Image (cartoon, rainbow, N blue to C red):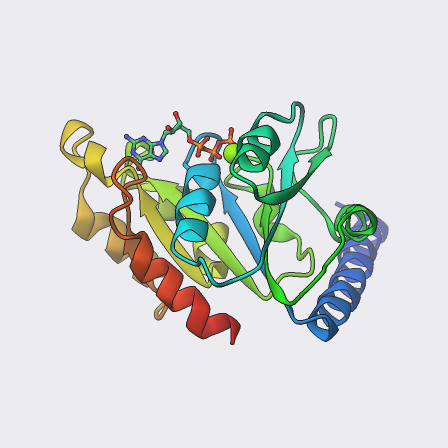
Length: 216
Ligand SMILES: Nc1nc2c(ncn2[C@@H]2O[C@H](COP(=O)(O)OP(=O)(O)OP(=O)(O)O)[C@@H](O)[C@H]2O)c(=O)[nH]1
Ligand SMILES: [Mg+2]
């Protein structure tokens, strides 16, 4: 890349971060804590959001669903009575701060609570863009393999909390706990890692407890 190109790319990141910080500040004034939920396609992002919400009955919950196409996840959440809006990027592989700023015009915050933003299924690009979040929650499934921290380091480096989902499948996919954790610790010394299973709900009460602490 030429010097000029680097400057342009840097300007795009700077402008994005500026809008993200404005969004975060305006949501904070309303008492909204924002969780940016990231992870590969099918990692278990929607299933995890649903299970966490089940363990936070006293919290007001809002969700923004980001997908390239379709409103399948939004329909699923709305059927459960969760206040959800859909964003379709039509191709873009991540959500960015201007997109979230626009979408927020369609979401009414009647009381303080927690806003989950499910990012586009992608273990790479979402980690590069702030969108107004207080924390980044990385969802990584056992089925993806224990080598993911080594191959996709940025998402693990930037995560404030990691959920290892589909732990019921560990034995079928030769998941190596030590290798996985060693990879994470090489990038992120202190991030909490929770093991969960959305089929039984196992592990999600601890995640919800951690989140409640973090958001208050
Ligand atoms: N066995 C098992 N299956 C799971 C678990 N969590 C999610 N799944 C399944 O994995 C598939 C994908 O889960 P979703 O929650 O839709 O994943 P997602 O990350 O939201 O997917 P996208 O939004 O398409 O990127 C579904 O068929 C879930 O039922 C789990 O803990 N164990
Ligand atoms: Mg989903």
